[in-house]
Image 1: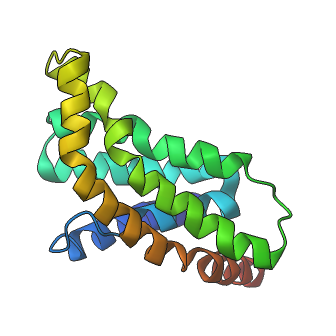
Image 2 (image 1 turned 45 degrees about the horizontal axis):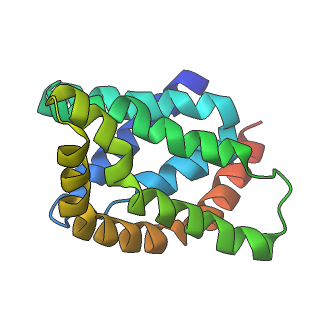
Length: 165
């Protein structure tokens, strides 16, 4: 049953990205990654990497796809490091803030893959980061808004899982 659930959650991530593609760098992926991690912990990597695989299958395993192999794992890892018993009032601030910062740092996180794939030196890599920063700002704002859904999603998923067991 878990594998069916994780497959569905990975497909949900993928479909949510497709539905929101008309908005540049605005999506639910960060919020979903954090919510799945808070609920499923290590097993959250399963739907995350199902999403990554679906992206490659759908759009091709081209250079843009490479950073997907690690960029979501960074957010997963940061979320894993957050205290498990955080007061609700604090979680309602911390979760959206972490999600927002991940969006802001997205270009920097993608830069190593870009530098390796396109043989960029440090000045070229820094230029690539600077030129992408306006999109990272949009990404950060979108992630902040999406991050407001994390706590309600976690509450709902935990309630539904209790009812299933």
